[in-house]
Amino acid sequence: MSDGSFDVTGKIALVTGGGTGVGKAISRALSAEGWTVVIAGRRLEVLEAAASELSVETGNEVKPLAADVGDPASVKALFGEIARTFGRLDLLVNNAGMFNSPVPLEEISFEEWSNVVAANLTGAFLCTQEAFRLMKSQDPRGGRIINNGSISATTPRPNSAPYTATKHAITGLTKSTALDGRPFDIACGQIDIGNAASDMTAAMSAGVLQANGEMASEATMDPVHVAEAVVYMAGLPLDANVLSMTVMATKMPFVGRG
Image 1 (cartoon, rainbow, N blue to C red):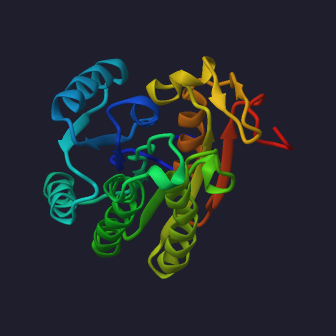
Image 2 (image 1 turned 180 degrees about the horizontal axis):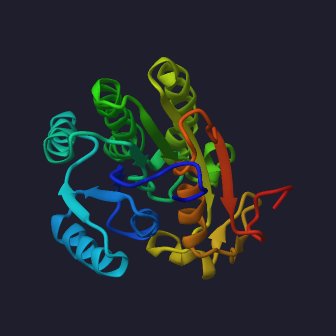
């Protein structure tokens, strides 16, 4: 029990993009807390290695399932397997996503735009839709959805139109999900993450383009702090919800003007 009010025994969590980076940190923390965790992603070998590692570390089952969150058939198959194996889903963490190439807006191809939208936004919608179907019908009814927003859900970086557009849209999806889920005991919140250290943010120490055109090194933080925040959000009873939370490296250039 994470805070003394919510027993996670027998509770099932799905973390998309759960085999690497922030998703893996979240999966580790949930598993250590007692959740049965399903990790999903496109590369089965990566998922299997992560699941084996986490299961040994935490002593709880971590199940790998390959899926492309941007593909409706793949998402339907993923949730079908969860329903057959576990009979329910108590937590969905929509974490899977990708950045776009850091090039001027007019140089971004339609293919790249479509890929980013599929991974970051369409995937979150499709997984939310399937989670609703399962959470509405299971007994006991309900569950929780946590969306990985970003600092970019409010404030863009230069040359990030596709990524920023999808993360702004995630905020709208979160609010609509929270509203539409009310009658069915489905809570939804969003965690906006700023500079969690991972392979995706490794270049930040070398220098990142700033809004004033300068290159500057940016502070990062251990993703374990994001994972701990997700565990807190997930551990609330369903009559309480964190709608929005920002977890960021204290010294990153976000608050104020750089």
